[in-house]
Image (cartoon, rainbow, N blue to C red; front, side, top):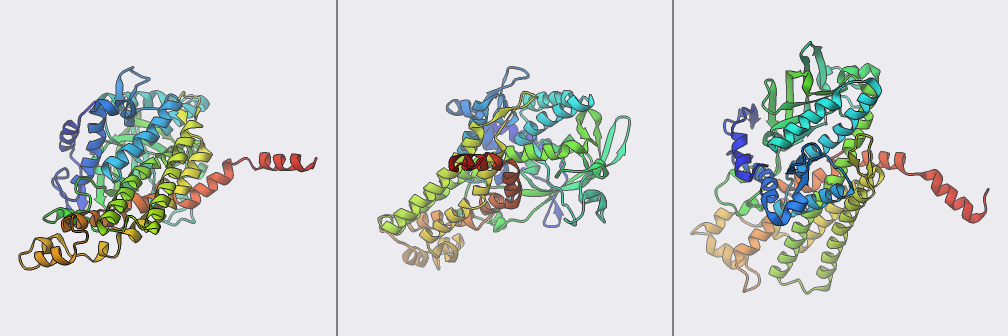
Length: 479
């Protein structure tokens, strides 16, 4: 396994085509807006090196028997699934943001199941290719960007009827040595911090969409792949002098639009090509895994609850009964989220491939709660923090010879708390609920792993209503 320093050096060797604010980024690793997100991924390597976290952060490869980073592991039992949830909460608390490796881990597990099922029906060799690829990822401890979401174009039309055929990534040429693909994947979390991209179809498809039913993996700097970094609220604060106004001084996240401009994929890296009848299963399996992964929001919630408690104490209102009650409610909601991600793991099952999958119904129930509870936790944190969270002057005003003494004087609260400490904790709450971290905590809670309606559809499909009706009729004497 790599350590954090080796991971950073491995990124420097990549030749990525990255664009941001209308310009090409020459040094991706050290760019002030991107670097905090790189450090969040590096934390996943650092934590795996620490003896006290190795049980959670590492696993035994079923391919080689070697110890591997859990983010490269294919789940072999219920314990693996539960530890995945524990790892997500741990890293969310350690970074206070999205640490970006969950999507790749979930993609590896979903493809391990579906490639096996395709082979069982059609006699293909996708799973054999995949296992060879998985061994490569594990051996080199690579960060994988799981790429599912297409740009979709006109949502009322299937892929093959789109005015622009590139609205969904698709195969444009089949060759003896591989395929050529074109299209784009949107909302790619941590894309430029990844060594590999594992592409999957974005929805269940029919025969007319056969060219869009494709899954493959490529190095992130393969020829023809281009990255356009997305904007986030308050993102340019990372490039300003000082650190106080960033809120989270250490870590952050990024999203990218990843464009594939006639990119060649060798056959040994192709895990689905035209088997449209398996696209729905792949989407559902990946979604179930990734909805479980929102254990990370519980860890970030831990940070936000802690920040709200500190703010209350600094303001001198921590003894007020209504503040105590709000803190209790925040903890109640956060721990309820944790119950969901552990429950869907504990009720997991073994697939034909040998990979263990979470309970699909419970993972969707968990993610449905994630679309709601973090917003209420954030609202309560803002309530406790007070309006100064969004009206305070900048760090430069705090440091200014002309205004610094006035900021110190008028923005202080309890006499034993430095004014700067009060401002720092309020900036952290702002960052988590309104700033760049709010993308990873709030908007990602809403739309990550599918929008709220996607979970409601899966709940309606997987819940056993007939059994509920049978139980009710039996008890009241209806034959």
